Amino acid sequence: MTAYTMTGQFHYGRPVYKSSRDGYLFYYQLDDRWYVGPYLGNTTVWMYVDDNSINAEDISETWYLVDGGYFLPNSRVRVTCVSVEGCQKVRISGSYSDQIDRMTTYTMTGQLFNDRPGYQSSSGDFLYYYNQDPAGWHVGPGLGSDAMYLPNDTSIYADGTSGTWYLSNATDFLPNRLVRVSCVDPGAVVNGQWSNWGSWATCHTYCTCGDDACVASTVQRTRKCITPPPRNGGSDCEGGSSQERLCACLGRTDRAVDPNPSPNPNPNPNPNPNPNPNPNPNLNPNSNPNPNPNPNPNPNPNPNPNPNPNPKP
Figure 1 (cartoon, one colour):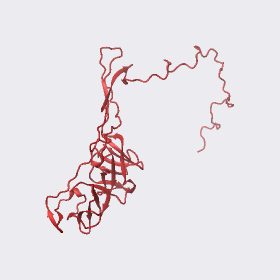
Figure 2 (cartoon, one colour; figure 1 turned 120 degrees about the vertical axis):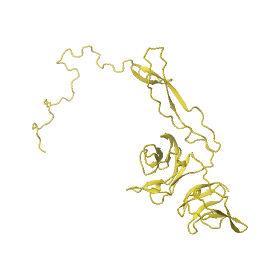
Figure 3 (cartoon, helix red, strand yellow; figure 1 turned 180 degrees about the vertical axis):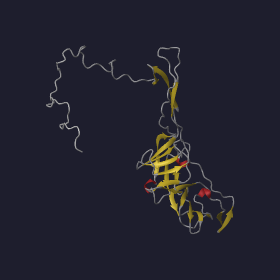
Figure 4 (cartoon, helix red, strand yellow; figure 1 turned 45 degrees about the vertical axis):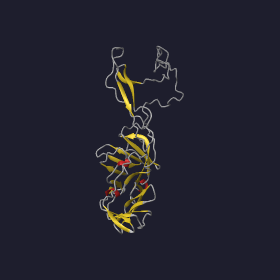
């Protein structure tokens, strides 16, 4: 009686689970049963249940436990799903035909997309959340691209998702109910890490320049301690989750003023100086102070050597 975690393997079309000790929870199609035992695929086991559910947490029939060399029913035994959402590294598994290369591990990048952590595989694919209708999770070679997707799931973390994924076969997207996202190491101690900072909010009001009585408004930007969140006793993120800065005027254009502005790299107060210091640059219209070193030998302003205005097609 302990916790079992998906290994990423499948046995007769069902996920394989492994405990933190040495036991396996797996399905055996020839008997139409789920087994718990020391060896994967071996029917010398400690307990079993006659149930063909796709996932172990959906098992509802009565378990039989070995007792004195016999299997006896025990109606109190249940399989429940333990929430382990927020893993820094997750695994997508379950397809053996379409998108096989994307059945691999994905690690949080530290960036947020639509207020959800983004993940990336070692091959460069992205696992991310997209909030357009229908909202859901997507996998593809770039943000906004689709090789597979999970519609109508708004989970904060990828390992909290459930439902049927749709995988591209280069012609269409086909459902595959065996595809799952699972936590790679649910028992690991993980320290919380901040996401990247979000964008500054937009200033909607501003003071008239020189009006000392006007109180400038402020704008904020935020970040979240979810890439990953602290888990299993790990430390929380240090520092604040928000920053503020003032809105002020610049002429008639509203802007946000950085409390630590960088110095002007160009000390010249005139950003567009006149390259010609002569206050009357054209006293002699016939003078040419900068003659073209390669004058055009053809004074005709029409560069087309064919004067016919209707060239042949």
